[in-house]
Length: 88
Image 1 (tube, one colour):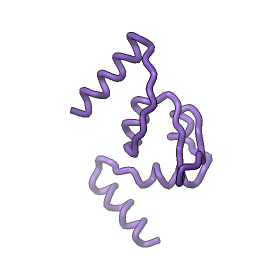
Image 2: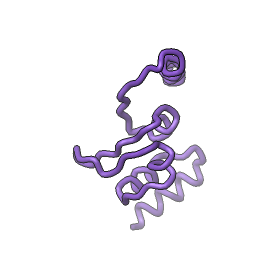
Image 3: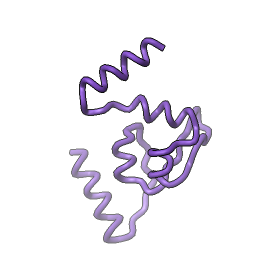
């Protein structure tokens, strides 16, 4: 279902130059869909810019924490990340 909705949004953007405000905690979807990203913490903007810049090279610690907490498909990597967070 999610894949279909994302494809529809991408098609609308490509065909009709459609733009939308997309709010999500799913950074993989944000990376796929958004050209610009705004990161909020408690309702305040902490970082904004091109999605490639913000998601690949964040300048703010809070953004880095969000990216580091996003699940990864490899269960061993995910388990290691969880263990590191719990140990801190």
